[in-house]
Image 1 (cartoon, each protein chain N blue to C red):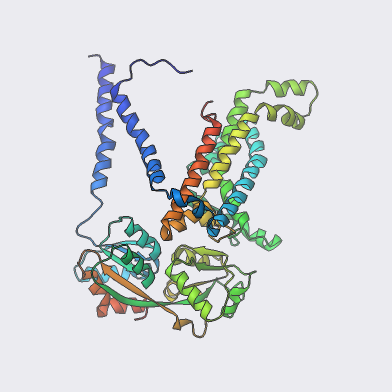
Image 2 (cartoon, rainbow over the protein chains, first blue to last red):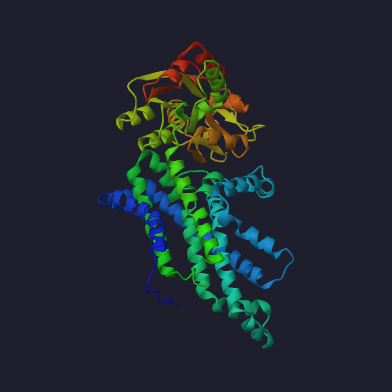
Length: 262
Length: 246
């Protein structure tokens, strides 16, 4: 894979080095200021434990929703030729580039109890999503879903349709072929997509705070706790930051850049 | 030199310096010496326009205002945010800045505020008394305990014997009143000034106005023109008409 490079030109190496520093220096700064000796105490303080619990529930349920909804969506995007397909794909990818706080605002006006859909949820089922853990899960899923869908869709395209067609020829119904042939053939990408979606859901802040509010034990996830702690207890904020950094790094190392190799 | 090479060099010359110059120019130009940079509590935002135009009549250029929860602006100041004047919505947040050694020589109390029980349009939660805030089936919002409006809310509800069943703890009073005005909350404890500015319905609570917070200001540069103006008759009249009390 790697092309041999004997002579790297300096005009390329210098900006490359500065680019690396822009990413690396803040992380080094964080690690250097982290309260290592009291890290365990900081991370077991009740407020942080609450936030870890909320974060785990929100991110895991959100990743499962990404699998449940994102897998069929990725399949549909990869296999169904539709007029306006590009537009649909762009809409699905939008949360990747949309400021999360805009996503949260959109969720509030769509699914809040005075919102387009939310008023009917409230009237018919008595469901109000804002200020609930379900609302935080929805906000996290909104931002995480495209990460899962892009990863899996590109794998489905790359794998092609031969296996599915062969299954169809031998009499398998489309749904059976999807479950027994397509899914196993793409399992690596599905796992990679899940890990990315989970990491993104875990780090979600803007959409959550806008749509789901901020309450300990219900919607206050680790990033929200970090934000609060930064204004009152910077040491605690640093400790949580180290935890989140470790998890994010762990996900990337576990994927070994698999997401990037297409 | 062939044409393709010339074009590549021209492109490089055009592209390379632009981000570098832009970055350093923008890093250096963040201080406008003619304008006072004020870190101010969110609740004061309702009076900004009036204060700006009154200052303009005195020949003082409109200040640059940064509004956030007092705890947030104090944290920014401690972390080195540039500012000429610090205004906070209570004494505790000012003390935090004092402890970090970032305040000016003199501190003045320039106004007061108190909370009201505000309800969403049409009062969907049928809220009639402060004790209704203890009802877990209603959607109730307060400021977080670290924000001056949250500290005041905790003090006031504890004194009046109400255990608030909050559904969200917002980082500043503006985000709290926004959610109330949007109808996503049934009720919240916001400042009287925010209730006046947004026109939300307020439920009368006997004794609620006895629990007040005092606003403090300190000049970080020694220039006290804006602070003096806030204490002047004109400044005080503007604050009073916005619902602050002195």
